[in-house]
Length: 364
Image 1 (spheres, rainbow, N blue to C red):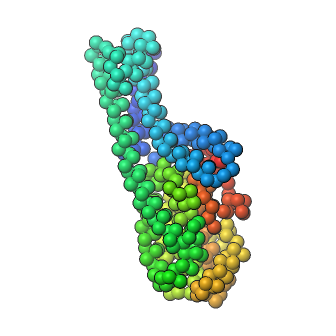
Image 2 (cartoon, rainbow, N blue to C red):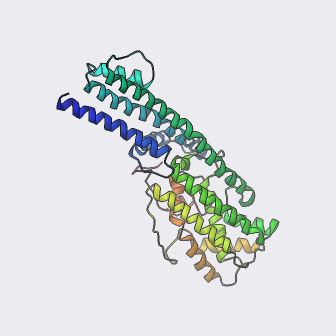
Image 3 (cartoon, rainbow, N blue to C red):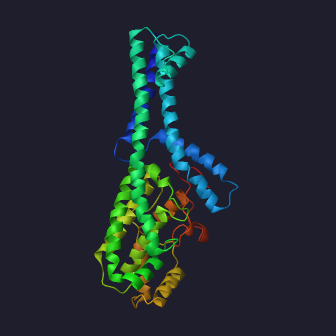
């Protein structure tokens, strides 16, 4: 084997090894990994979806289009893997003397797809053929085995999101959640909500970083979203801790911390910038006028409020600043439906237009 063929063989072997490592890191390793291949696949596909929605103005129609984004991206990974493996083995076949590049292509494709129409009598090349066939089956099995994990995590997420509609209305609102609890259950029962959603936040942080495609799986109903649900619960907990005149419940503070850590963890994976150590008096996207309007609405529904409105505002802003940037950025990233104090910030207040989707890609 001359130097050129040796280099081609090593290049093909490296390409196959890199593809296999990428698949293992993405589908087997239980942690989020920032790999080039999935990023390129999803970014390229996002461009296609952005072009298809360029003239679509109805959110319902845009939601229907974007509902296909994550499934298409997931299944696009398989042909991407197989193509790279085919090219890698084609280089190795050519280097060990299979003949022309077209002969190497036929042998690689026949072996990868286990078609069997191209064969070889050489021992070393036969080993390569068998290894390629096994690798092709492994990649297909990885994707098939990946799907139950995704839909299991998706179902856990959506049960809580759907259940929130009963408590917080549609779209979910922190003010509505507090009004309904005060009227139906009593504010002393809110601790159950904070405990349940603390667990939910821990679950989505683990699942949406380990399985990042989950972030783009949309809820079955276009007016629901895991991002807006998270925002409503966090704002309700922040209002309870800062503004509602009830005994302080440590579970609300723990829920807020679990929530902003989860949103920050997911935002960090998608390369969304945020301040990890914000000051309590840093600006937030909620205005004082909006806060006062929310307090007035709560007071009209006989929700007990603390007498010092100025201190309540400062306390609320001190809680909200921990998750404000990540919440708005993720709402933009996943094209979340309208919800007060969350996705409405992007239009109503000219909020931050984050243009990162695992790379610098303009979002629709």
